[in-house]
Amino acid sequence: MSNGDIFVGEVIGTAILILFGAGVCAAVTLRYSKARASGWVVISFGWGFAVLAGAYTAAPLSGGQLNPAVTIGIAVDTGKWDKVWIYILGQMVGAMLGAVLAYLVYLAQFNANVASGAGKGGAEDEAEAEDAGPTPTLGIFATIPEIDNRVANLLTEIIATIALVLPILAFGLTKGLGESGTQVLIVALLVVGIGLSLGGPTGYAINPARDLGPRIVHSFLPIPNKGTSGWSYAIVPVAGPLIGGALAGVIYNLAF
Image (cartoon, rainbow, N blue to C red; front, top):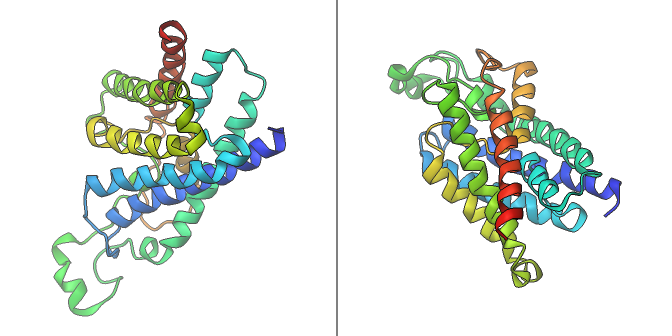
């Protein structure tokens, strides 16, 4: 794979990943969305389908890694680091692009993210009077822990990322999966499983680009009442997955 193919593939694939992922979070979160309050199961499956769409699209160009933690895990296992920076650069650019696209899809809903009376109007607004006030938007773009305990949050992200990257590396041992294209589908289901099982404490970033790129975009988008971008917490969903990805590469190298 050429450097250009890798970069383009990771930009496109990660943009699709975040478009779907931030999109499902927006659909569940924003006040005037038809999917509002549909819950964590919907979000987990939305992110799984996001991985499915993004990875399948990028696979012919770059292999569809879409995640610096996966890229680091592969590099630790194989010892090949020369293209790591290209993968990560593409992933970051793609993550920011996908966040902007998700914002544009829900532009009207973001602009209506104000107190009751600025949305549809009339009886529908009156019916939502008890839920008046702006809906927090950072969680649409980046992760927010339920309990702000940095040590516990970091451990969660490390363990959840190992649970992602180690199986991905192991799937590579089964040649039939890669040849049939089933491997990407299984990884997508793995992401759903991680969301349902391990996502409760932190929102399961398990991908530094997935969190950092959209968080940067959130900081400069003109979203009404958007609040803080949570920079004091941002190190956790970056460092945790990177550590987890590296540990997964070490474990895989030693055990397999």
